[in-house]
Length: 314
Image 1 (cartoon, rainbow, N blue to C red):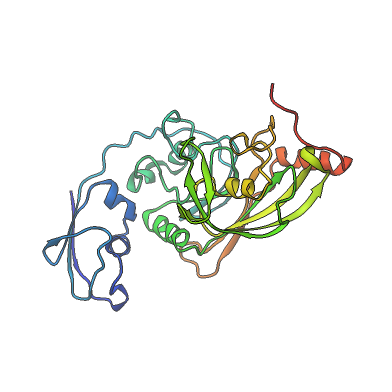
Image 2 (cartoon, one colour; image 1 turned 120 degrees about the horizontal axis):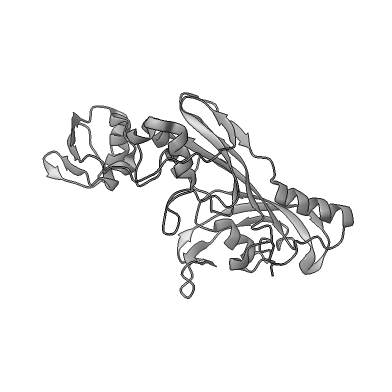
């Protein structure tokens, strides 16, 4: 059991959420307080992590010890774009699950990070996710950042929460979006019929926003290939896939949202990520090259200026 006691003495914390204050004061990632069932008191009264603190408030926290880790380190090769003593930037391949879940207890990015980080993982692992700042879908490739210590994890996650991270994606669709460039807002909600799928709605669900533009288009009709640039300002599950479907340009290989079937999988890639690293004050950009599966499809389409879509599955 870890016990923290302190008084709110800095003006900048006036009216701030307790979990954010705790994270900076203790250096403990704030999701640990919820995951480990921390008992919180402010001025002698029980409170929640969302409690807004006041100057002079006395805070007491009882944080149970974390349960033994069930995450097994695995020597899964990581394609590193950058590494220093605080962070890793990874080019995640398509097909790699980010963290363990139902049906994916091993062979995940979390297992690979546990191996790469070694003993450091035990200091801040929560729910089998060592250092994972954000997530990419299994079938999406590209840039993903991970932290090596609790303070770095909190600093990076805060940038994502506050939408101070610039994310650029590339997708291949069989036709240009309609219209060919612009932005799409509205909300994304879970499909009431197919619970593993999401739908676009004008005002029901969670707000989602994406800017997009058509970069290049080859061929016409259902067998065409169109390269689309995407800049999401929010990070909802399946956001880009749902938005391109709504724009009448579902992603090639996206069987769930009506895209043309493709033996090479989902044609969606997190191309670049721009954010401020811990101990730095100027944002950096990291880029992951377009993967071979997408390059090959574009090359075939460019050479022929004719239908360039992947062959269908059997």
